[in-house]
Length: 175
Image (cartoon, rainbow, N blue to C red):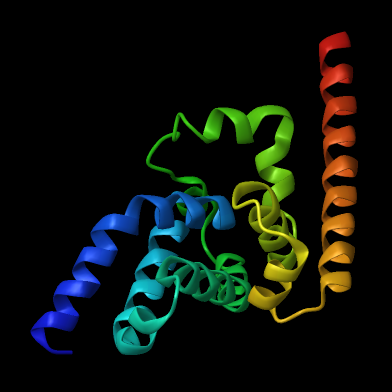
């Protein structure tokens, strides 16, 4: 990468880093995993910057890369976490006031965390990024019909999880 390409990449990172960080946080549900995902995405983009820079929308290219890394990489992370001690897995830097208050309410965060990566990615791309089924299908390399099925299943799992957490909360209040 020559100096002019490096300057372009640096300007892109400065301009989009907050948005990419928020997007990664929504995808992963975890601040540390989001930072890792952003870093892995930026490494990939730096390697292919000539191609990315020529794309009509480098930020969309970055988000597509991020979603694909998340969907494929999350499987490895989940296998690794099965062996991680509980106290290390539960340690966090503290809540992100903008997102965590909403997400933690009614067990939503736990329910989102339990979704398969592709279902969670569909929900994030739909409700966080406001993408349509065709665009989401291109990102995940699926048909628009498959995206609708993934969204339907994800929302069904969320409803079931939230209904059971609301029922548990009602029982606790009665005790």
